[in-house]
Amino acid sequence: MEAFYTLQGEGMHQGKAAWFIRLGGCDVGCVWCDVKESWDINAHPQKTIDDIVSSALRFVPVQHHKETDNRGIVVITGGEPLLHNLDALTSALKKAGFRTHIETSGSSKISGSWDWICLSPKKFKAPLPEVISRADELKIIVYNTSDFAWGEKYAAGVKTDCKLYLQPEWSKADTITPLIIDYIKANPQWQLSLQVHKHINIP
Image 1 (cartoon, one colour):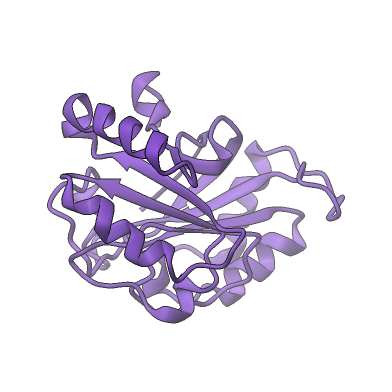
Image 2 (image 1 turned 60 degrees about the horizontal axis):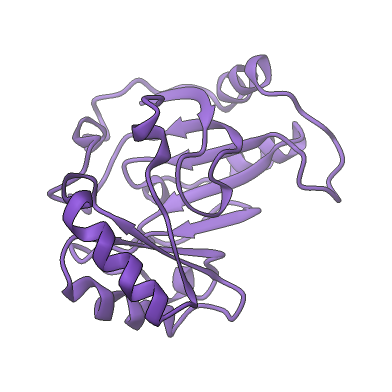
């Protein structure tokens, strides 16, 4: 659908420069999705992997030191990116020197080679156990108070070093954020994630 260079606005890697690749297609259909135009998999032109990687290399500084976290970050998002087989794309990105991150609902079979998996499960289509167990970051979008208990259900299934985040749904942030703060104070294994990119008006 699109690709752009910006700062990661959410979660563990908030504030870091990243090249975002947004793939078309989604079968989850969140009512509060802010990129509904990504849902139709046939509405966006196909590009070759070489073109996708070349675009990233034009914008993102790459350091070929794989033992560090200073390599350029590429985030694959959507839509639901796991509707596509991502093995070849991530292999090419890693060969070019990038760290590969994904943001997924986890509702489709996992493919690709990842340095970071951000799982943001949705009630509309549940994540697969194989994705839950591999998540490096669990990001629960809080729309109403029942989402706290719903998020705990998934937190019980992730690995012990998975980062746990609660993020207010943007349209309800004014009312939900204070509730999240109180919840985190009582349950400090969780952290607050804010959509900082929206506050500072960047992609």
